[in-house]
Every structure is written in C-alpha cells, then in structure tokens.
Amino acid sequence: MTALAERHGAVNLGQGFPDFPSPDFVKRAAVAAIEQDVNQYAPSAGRPSLREAIARRLERRYGWSVDPARQVVVTHGATEALFASILALVDPGDEVILFEPAYDSYLPSIGMACGVPRCYTLRPPDWAVDRDELAALFSPKTRLLLLNTPHNPTGKVFSAAELGMIAELCLEHDVIAVTDEVYEHIVFNGLSHRPLATFPGMADRTVTVSSLAKTFSVTGWKVGWVAASPELAEAVMRAHQFITFSGAAPLQEAAATALAAPAAYYDELAAMYLSRRDFLVSALRRAGLKPIVPQGTYFVMVDIDGLGFADDVAFCRYLTVEIGVAAIPPGAFYRNPADGRKLARFAFCKSDETLALAAERLQHLGLLRPS
Ligand SMILES: Cc1ncc(COP(=O)(O)O)c(C=O)c1O
Image (cartoon, rainbow, N blue to C red; front, side, top):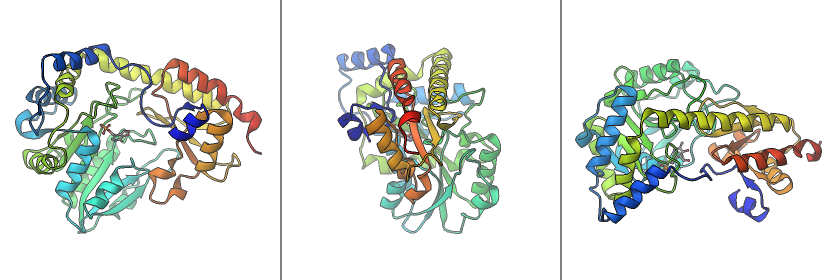
C-alpha cells in the first residue's frame, strides 16, 4: 500500500509510523552516546543502564518488581523479542494460541519454530473474548498463548476481566503467555493497561515484550525488550544470542534516558494520540464511513460493509488511487484474508497537516464511491 500510495501521491495513513519528529531529548541522548563513543558491541542481554531503566519503569508504572540483571533482555525491537521468545519456548508440534487479526510477524515466527497456530478470531464491533470459545482452543499440546494488548489492528484494550480469564486458562492448562505490549502507553478514555504478568500466578509464566518504538516515536531504532522470570528470560536470552547477539549500543543508552522521562511525558503522549484519534474518527464519520472507535494504539478500524466494494483490498485500492488516502486492507492480519474483507485500517500517528489533508480528501468519498 505504501508503494501504491507513493505512486499516486496519496496521504499515507497505512503503515504505522509517526511522520512527525521524535522527541528532542531522546535524539540528543543518542547523539551524545555516539559522541561519547558508546559505539562497540552491547552485552548480549543489553546495556546495564537500559536494563535498569526498564526495571525501574515497570516498578514505577505497574508496581512490578524485576531484577534487571536476571529478568530483562534487550532485543532488536519487539519483533525480535517475540521471535526469540517463540523460538526459545516452542518445540516442533507445540500449539500456540493467538488472537486474530494478528500482527503480521506472529504466524511466520510460529511457523519458523515449527509450532502449530490455534487462532481465536476477534469480531467487530467490540472484539470481545468468549470464555468457552477460547477454552476450546486449549489442548494438552498447547505450549504458549500469544497476547497483544493494546491490540493492533483493532485498537482493543483487553479488559481486566478478559485478562483474568486468560490468566486462569493459562494456569489451568500450564501454558506460558507471551505478551506484546508495545502500545502500553497509548490507551484512552480513562482505561489503563495492565500487564498480564501482574495477574495472580502469572509472573513466573509470562514473557512480557515491549519496545521504545511507539512510546518515543522511534520506530526506526528497533530497541525492544523482554521482562520475565529468570528461567524464562534465560531461555529467551539463549535464542536471542544467536539471532542478533545484540542491538545498537548508543541507541540502548539513549533508550535508558528516554525511559526515565517523567510521568508527564507519558500522559502527554496519550493525550496527543487521543486528540488525533478524535480528529480522524470525526473526519471518517463526515465522509460517511463507520469507524470502530479504538480504546488504544494509533489505529482505527473502519467497517466498510455495505459500501459496494468487493473486499478490503478493492476499497483500499480505490481510496488510494481515486481519493488520495492510503489505508491498510486488514486481510493481511488474518490466516484467511477473507475474514478481513469488511474492514480497513487507518493510522493516526501522523502530523496535524497530514491528518488535515487526509480529512479534506476523505470528504470526496461520498461523492465518488461506486453505488
Ligand atoms: C503489535 C505490534 N508488535 C510489534 C511491533 C513491532 O515493534 P518493533 O518495531 O519494536 O519491532 C509492532 C509495530 O507495528 C506492532 O504493531
């Protein structure tokens, strides 16, 4: 979609990367680290300053205490953290439960570990989880449950009741959870994110993954991490050591500075995305579309059923080529792409100018679309 958007000069609300500057204090910390010659290999588990900053952040935000030396591993973005966790914990034939639509690296990572995916399909408009339907996916072969909250692409924030139910099922079936929490700080409307690891009995059976990318608008840095029990962290560490060995040392140093930001930074981030969400949601509504208002992340799904398009790909192609706004067809987030055919995903991690231009162009949709 990005290539198509470029060819047609479309405003790109497809791929989820901010098009506004990263925070100055984070950029300055990276420049300073390079100038101070933090330029050689970082330890495989990550620079101690960053591991300590991650542990302090978890303690301050969630009251969750981890030992930075034994329970934190720094990786090349959350994507590598997820891959290393899956590779470390899944043996051939083991089953992995995941929720679809799913971030696109999950299924290939499970495939490379020769695991067997078992998908729970979240359905619009509320993407709720039904206990019996989820429980039916567990079997004696279930090894992992992969959870992403706040969730890309739906914008769902799993409720405390849903997380409690997932925790109970993991405990009952002796299953390890791997949680992708990269949008942990982008949550709206008084809701709050709570790591699954902080639920009773889950600290020792959860690998918590997050990264710097979304919280500090540095998706190109690829600084991620895992927090887990010493045993699980060591397992992930063994896989990580031979996947990338370590990530960029000066960026890890800058990440330590970033994570020490005061609480106000995180509040402002959520407030900034809330106003962008509301702006895009109302522009979509004015264009005659049906946005499903997200509780978190910087994505909004739109229900395109009944608009006269064959599927999500046809809609997104039309929108890009004829209207000049690019969105993502969510079929790519499902094992069976037809499951996403009535949806389109828009990203609002964009500057005011980008969003204003998109809003203006979207208003032509009602006039032009096929009846
Ligand atoms: C759900 C989810 N997980 C992981 C990532 C990737 O994170 P990173 O850039 O730290 O690898 C993304 C990025 O879009 C994402 O949406």
